View 1 (cartoon, one colour):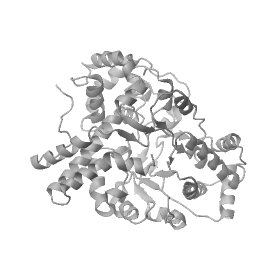
View 2 (cartoon, rainbow, N blue to C red; view 1 turned 120 degrees about the vertical axis):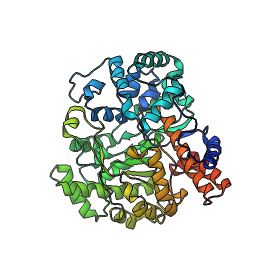
View 3 (cartoon, helix red, strand yellow; view 1 turned 90 degrees about the vertical axis):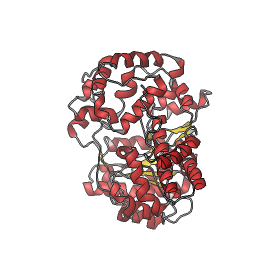
View 4 (cartoon, helix red, strand yellow; view 1 turned 180 degrees about the vertical axis):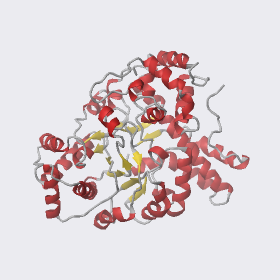
Length: 468
């Protein structure tokens, strides 16, 4: 019994389904461009075998463990490392059995699609995961992971990854990227500049991070001008390691354009630890505009991932740290929030900003009109909770009629789960082909144009938008 329906995600109507199939056949085997994500560069640097199925699929993937936690299974029982070293489950088979016995929780979710795609196409499994098949799965996957063909570099090539971008802190030494570069391996793995640790006053250890920022750049980060110079130095260092983009994970999209004296005074407050919550938000806002100006200097593409209330559970954050499934979407304003940045640099030639949202209500009201007017703005694909077939459909239906296809940037998978990358791109290609087929059969798009757009969405737009 195959785990995957060959016509999954295609329209039920036979005529439209036939068009979707034809479109999909032209893009299904295109190389994968993964311009933004969170895979670990150490995998590709060291090329060690993945340790076991649980630590490949369950422990690192917040899509999986947040669902299990929602049903009362503690993170510790899933092997998620604790923040203070408190003991957690380390038996991979026990973790896997626990996951398998609750696999029914993922029915109807995109996670189920991604997992079944990996199980069938990577590990040749044709029976459904359950408590009864848990050990069969564990043994089959473990056997394969021990083979050279399942090491990270081999999978990179098997997935036909043309390029993958990881994401590193502004304080990272990029040692793994240097190892990859000198190894002689031909896989293209680039980094992305993520400055949150030295931009967000609410980030753990912010004051110490600023000191470290000055030490590693040789810049005087006690002053705002020296602090901005430190960003210039680090951005150049990241570009030397292949970076073409920056990434900004702010809770809101607020921007500001303060005078230099106002910015200096604000920086002095946040650096000293005397800043109010309002100061912290104002500083993040100012830094989005400063980062846009730096992008004009060095040509890096700017990504704004706004709208997540990070670490919503204080208890989970204290016990297990960041990125443990308790980041929750919240309403986000873009029209008023982005105006200071856009007034300052929004019409400057060469600036490229990709906007993401976790607030779907702004697709047609705010984001599509903004991207449909400002030449610097492009819309990133449905992100995080909305990286799903229905999320992709809602995005296309609400955005394309105002912004068109060419003010969007194709697809990026934005994942930590390596084996899900080909599955996620396959879902995106199928969903886009289904949408295009509907346009064709309802007379809104010529069929020859649909084939061009399918190619652009699957491949060309991401390469161009991220300057890869």
